[in-house]
Length: 303
Image 1 (cartoon, helix red, strand yellow):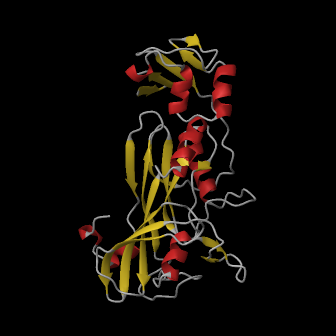
Image 2: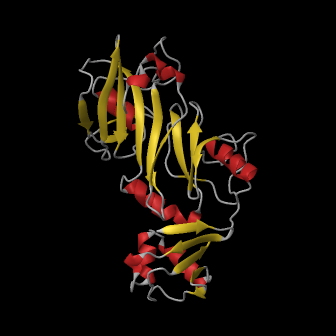
């Protein structure tokens, strides 16, 4: 579908697939939540060819101009004293670089977190929208975090995350058992809380399903570089999975050990892939450079 972003929302051209189809089908394809669909119609925020839509049972025709009104909403997080680093943005999302040591948010809604920096960026850009990260990163992990920019499409992006259409790649520096470069494998051990150590997680038969796809990209000395793809998003998933199989991450204070060859935790959320809610266009965004990973010849490595 083709669309235009306007000051008040979106104008979308219905393609041939919507000829003699109900409005319901169109809203289904956008994965709008039930509350959002109800609000669009009840608040007269959905028009077809400038005519108010009164029911999802109305029919569309190919080429109809569908207007979705998106009223501005308040930034709902205290602003930090500096904005976040935005690596990429479009009409639907923005992708933020998180430094190691920064938390994404806390329960007291303080400004001293990535959400606070995102709020400062929204304010600086003059955007009136809530702060909505679509996933989390551990405090000590650096890399990309995806934020929703338009509440109307939040449910659709959440559905992409749940169905793995949003995919995240991590680079991990580990020590441990050596293996041939190019070796790929899957770790699907369940993960649960460690009852004996607060804040830690372990492989546990009674834990939650967890699946990590791993490929060995490079070796140098006693170190290995893995690229990891998450099929689930459990807390500390990569750290627990790799360490439990004999590959602890460097400088992991919970599951690994110190290494003087590197600064900080050897885990980097290096890229993220997602689809635009309206056009379904696929984007793969790479993070800013990470000097810690120059130990390996990344220019020669495909990941």
